[in-house]
Length: 208
Image 1 (cartoon, rainbow, N blue to C red):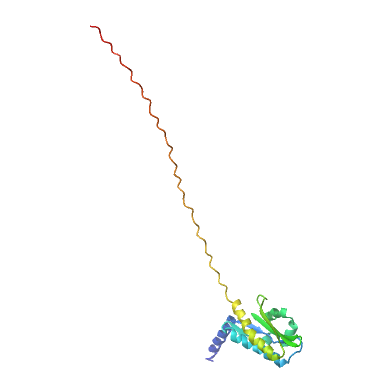
Image 2 (image 1 turned 60 degrees about the vertical axis):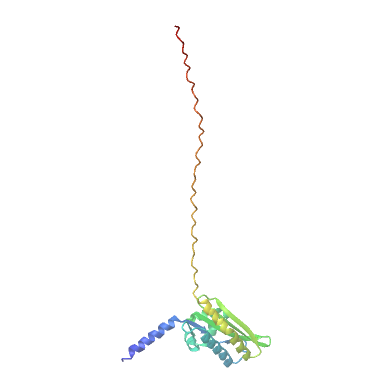
């Protein structure tokens, strides 16, 4: 009974860790033309999941297993019934509570096998990236996955990076210099005052 609290704490810690991770659902590879065996389809799916686990940081992403996906959908047949079109992958991702969903489809192109792999952001419904390739056999399809899948999953890292907002630099207002207007003094013309002539004094001599 003493160990019970420890188990509870461990369960809560694991649950909190799981909520911090973004869930990636890689659905089983579909064969549009019964071109290869079911065991080969499973092998290709496993290789895609292994690549995702190697490329994506474990502290940020959790790759869902087939069992966890089936637990949401009930069975693989239900997945086909929900939607058999690539455009509905995001809808299936929502049903399995994933943040990202991906799936490969195998078909025929001429005399060769073809593979198409698509990765969607479930929240936005947008296609993150995809790749397509052709090969004469299933081993070539595996080589196409090994060459292209790592780069595709790295697109998730670029997409989920928080966008840094560039600081808004306000242009300082340059105050216009104060213009001192000095008024020129008016020149006053000084005219000389008119000289008034002094009255002439005329003296008369008195006769002796």
